[in-house]
Length: 391
Image (cartoon, rainbow, N blue to C red; front, side, top):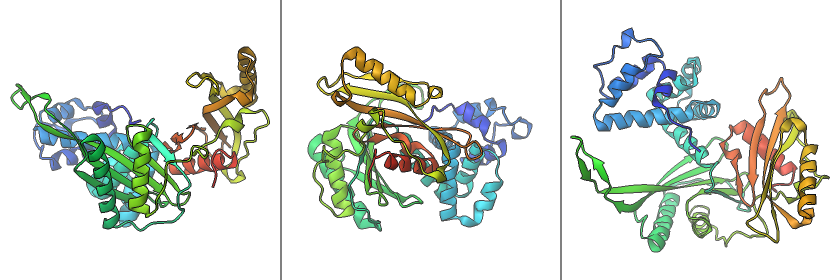
């Protein structure tokens, strides 16, 4: 989920000297007493921004929204990756900048392509925590060299699918980026249904404006573990055909519908008291706790119980809560299906003071994609050790 965007708040986080360069490049050179402003006096800047012509005002807003997404530990790490790839000679300048928002603005002003690509990844990771992000496994674990033919084939496949079934998406554009680590990101932009909403024109009068809006899909293929993540609204009747079309167009393989017997994630075995939650010694994890579990009675689909637990009580508290619920409902573990679990990993204090928290939902959703790469790798390693995932 994208962060809340408060323009005044993000302006306060950016040094006036950097904001000034950004505004002057956009053509705003009057009306702001830059030399007299304190670093957190943003009202004159905000007021001048709101008086800009629409096109310049929107440009600044888009930049600030992207900075808002990138101004955290995860975002800065992606900026570093892209500067290393695109302009490694400027990495020392970036490193000298203090403040996450300043680092993002500096990158926009000085290594714009790195900023643009990092912003794409930030948007994808924000989407990955939502309900429309679906994972599929069991694909070829082979690296691919993406070229224009792959993008053209995917473009044609998506346009054909949406136009044939929904009478939209006839126009499609594909943006592709390779993430350090090998994941291939494809952002698809398709034209939505035409609309003529009532809007205010430049003189403040209500008019109807004919628009051709855009909707998007995101595909992320990870060759190291043979997984494909898809962001697409519409449920199974949409994401399964899109998985098939992507695999044919980009990977050159034909796949059928996902095998319901082999979901991306399996959690039922972690409901039992004899569960094993081993960790890799190199990760320096000192405690693993299940903090939340959602279970569904097999013979009553749609009904569920959710148990939220205090991590301070330790792993055995989950067993007490489950036993109490089973006794109340006269159920046995073999009559329950785990729909979702949340975990907390605590690390040795000298390694990482804050815990890693993440959730897994069956059959194919996990919010680890939104975590910084190092933490994501640790979480994925744990899921394999716990036999939640395979491969």
